[in-house]
Image (cartoon, rainbow over all chains, first blue to last red; front, side, top):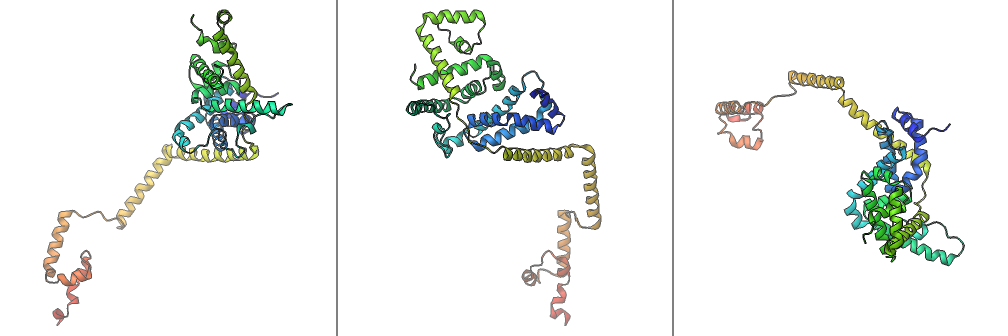
Length: 189
Length: 163
């Protein structure tokens, strides 16, 4: 029988290396992807997702089990990423490339899911999505994090609030403002 | 008409209790502005969810090996700090440092500084005995002010005294 994340975390707290490896295996993809979504930099995403696993190993004993393991772990990861962005904001403003241009592949069109039947229609849709995601990159950190936790990780509002260390009402305000901004950007309002 | 902005997101996410949900539904039936906003919010969330950009590929074996290395390095650092915080090793280190200091003092490796006034008096006495003012040009050339052993033997450097 497969152990739950919470059970594995309790084993990590008693220095169980195999349990730690299992948790890393389960979450490495999600952790890297979420970190990349927030940071938009592959190297930083790799580094900070690894740091989140190290923090998990070191503080597994403080996992009380009140929240789900995934929520607890995302809280570590997202706060590492937000802190990192906060500390390096001035530097990013000077040297960072435009959103989605930090990779050799360039445009977000290369990172969107593969087109389906009608290539022309898909190209048009790809451009719209590219504009939409560029607008997401322009949101405030908290708004973007709340939105990503919703659309990417499908977290309910209560868990987003736990991850971002704020109230559920604040999460709804972040989401409302984010969606209102995106709506304006897409010319829908 | 007041718009229930604070409830719209919870409505879109299906997180409203029945009473509030019915209130918002009734409002949307009569408010085109809010109805459009809800429709757009749902469309945007759907578009974002169906077009999540993928990060660059990563070699997971290398990722995990690197993670292991970082974890090991962190563990060693933590052990170093723990060792420093233990009372017995710290007491032993302090005792060893004290013993070394005593040995150094006894063997003369370490010479405490001489009291300033006493040193000045000694220099005056020595200078008067050797008539240093008269020999100043010689001493200046030798640049040996501080080496009293050499200063003490200055007389031997002067042939006139020997003769």
